[in-house]
Image (cartoon, rainbow, N blue to C red; front, side, top):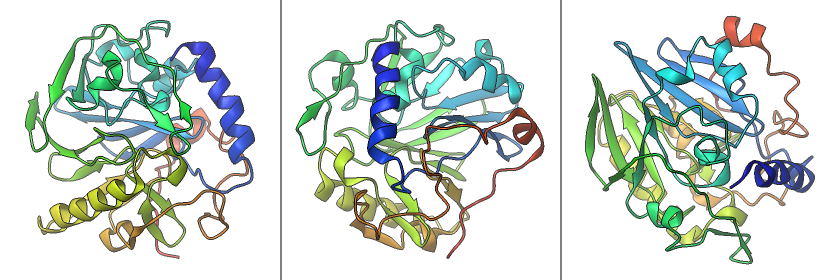
Length: 288
């Protein structure tokens, strides 16, 4: 996905979803002492820091303001040596694209072995019920391919990889230090709880719902506090809220699936400022 394609998606997605109250990204800032977020239009990327090591989770769009916004958080792009990718969609890998600013050219990229087939060209990513194929992403970063259930150690950081196919065939979520679950595009949070992610963007909605059921069983069986962080609709540590509607799919052109707190156009970033990033903690979703 070249820079021009990323800019084109911004325009087309803004026109398509404007006023639909679907995307409610977090602004740039801190969720917790070691967990930070950067907003790129409707998408969020995250940074997890522990004992001097920072892991980036997803790489956002091919986005011109990434270095600037990382600066609001005092994170140097050159310090990022490890990037976990949930899936290879435009808004999750753009900063790795060959015609990007190459802020992370030396970083190792961790991606599921199934999901990697999109990057090699063995698979083509389809959206809108298979009627539209996204351009192939091209990146030269060194990759480590991951399996379901695999556990990594990156410095003192523990990362557990959990396969949740549906949105894409090889979508992974990452449980970090048994406390922070980064879910990419597995979940959509509305005002009244979590749903399976947006229907028009899934490879298989039926598979996505089944994967979400398995994920709930996995997470609840651990019997410990876990914060769940999404790629487009915020975070919460209320698991009842997270999985309240896990059998339902967010259908973006149906009024039921809206969040009245979502901006009219999530691609307008006027409220994402350095002052807020440095001074306001990012609040969690709560029950309506």
